[in-house]
Picture 1 (tube, rainbow, N blue to C red):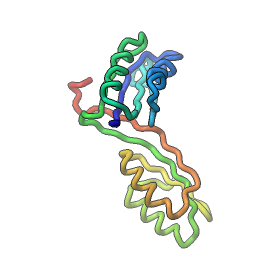
Picture 2 (picture 1 turned 90 degrees about the vertical axis):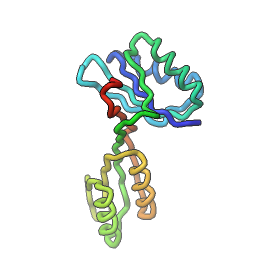
Picture 3 (picture 1 turned 120 degrees about the vertical axis):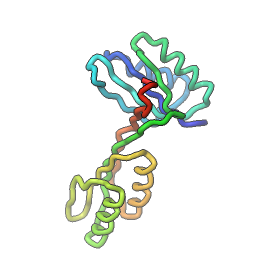
Length: 162
């Protein structure tokens, strides 16, 4: 099963998200990541989904997405040159002796300190998903209390594909 990053431009209307997500769930595919936002045009939203699946089935899903009445455009960013980002908030238990190490680690990854207290630190990191995964792995020994990720977004570098 390969990883696909599907970007779907849709009319900004109620029920569209449910119909789009329903196409994946009807075929037994879980959406690993989902991010939805307005575009520069308030009447249009963009949905970015990361799914794992067979290339043939994903191709059929894309064709069926294009048939939905509120769908404007479907793009697969999987094999395209694109900028991909995600945001993570990570709440780490931090004893006094470990704070310096965690702060240094956050500097290496260019993470922001969102909150610091006597016994914990909340870090924010906006980066490529792989970099966030690596950062989380390095923080695990300190004791991650809570973790939240936004879902991946993707924008094609080549404006000819728009």
